[in-house]
Length: 197
Image (cartoon, rainbow, N blue to C red; front, side):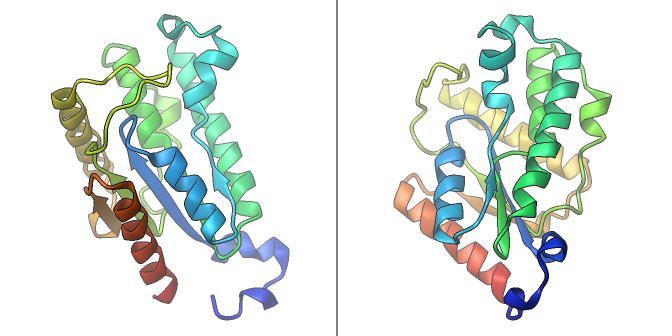
């Protein structure tokens, strides 16, 4: 990191630190990811699946098929690689293939997408920030899981999914404060620690 300015552009993606912001819906992930990227003057990759229904299915969530989740997994990977190519020391990711597979099972009645699972890579990220559902649920028109007990249950399901896929759980930082400013500062502390390591 100290010698970043001397690394040629084509090689930088191999050295950039990769930070995943994950969690269930309405935990402030997207806003937080953008703020972190701006704070570090770097790139970020948005959660493509969030807008897939609107852009490809006419807003009809009931029209999802397994092939749609295959496509989301692939398009997300492409978008992630594009963001990584322009990273400044650290790149932020608003989702990953585990989250895509998590929503696939919700929408498809428990069925899995093997092609989406192929993009799951437990060694990919240097830091994973897991946002707990402790902030108020906001209905932005794309969300549907607003009951607090259900939010907490699904957060545990997602956490268990990372464990079952073999992720190194020591790379995770759980952010549970209900205060947005404190959540942001918790994330900054975790990223700073990563960049110093």
